[in-house]
Length: 305
Image 1: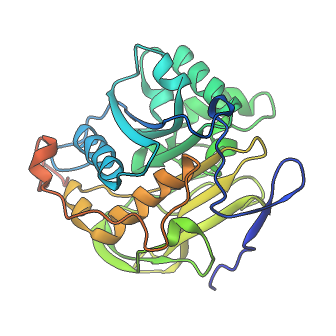
Image 2: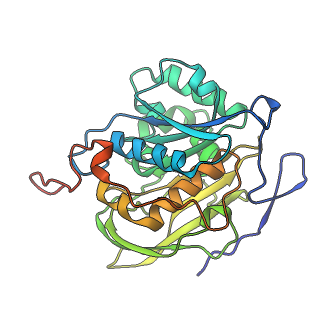
């Protein structure tokens, strides 16, 4: 089955909004410079896998290389000490082991910072394991009959070690296909193949995809018993903000995949309220060592990666 979704969504006020319509509202000043803040959370993965610091620097560099008028990107390794960087961000881009606001030591303040940002229609993008929540994160909300707010902010998440849903993480060969929808994030990239760990059976809500959530990419996984799995999605929130979840890459070397890099950069630009160019946000193939990873190629440890 190929996902077919409408090309126009309803904004909070009921008016039709075409995908890609700029959402400039930060300070109600469209001319104000807007910033994508990449927040790097904790990670204990082996060298060559996740590489969250290097991956964060690479994503910010991709955005800055575009030269889009009014949009720049910066990186915070760890939770920002200066809260104004979050308050002034047009979008928050997360990379780390589990959703960083839940994984840092100052969790309560971090979650409060994100709640404040989302309340003013800030965008959000989570990459690979940063889409992840564990039982300890969701249980306090479920006990009150509520959902974790990341479900609303981003439209879904990777449910790892959760009681209500069990997503799957497995290293495997995968073909990532853009869905058959008209969406700016899908501009300028095509189907690609790689060895990676695209999460499957991701949690998209108690009733499945919400009306304001659009699947962006799918893959027939796992290879031994394939079904069409959603590996990336976007949401247009009722507050006007935009969210994107992309459950890859696991291996740092896969940032060399041009189509993946374009896909992620498109997502950041769109989530910040900018129009994505028709040709997509394509960037030169990066020199991976430039971003100071612990390793480019994964190093094996006993029992696997």
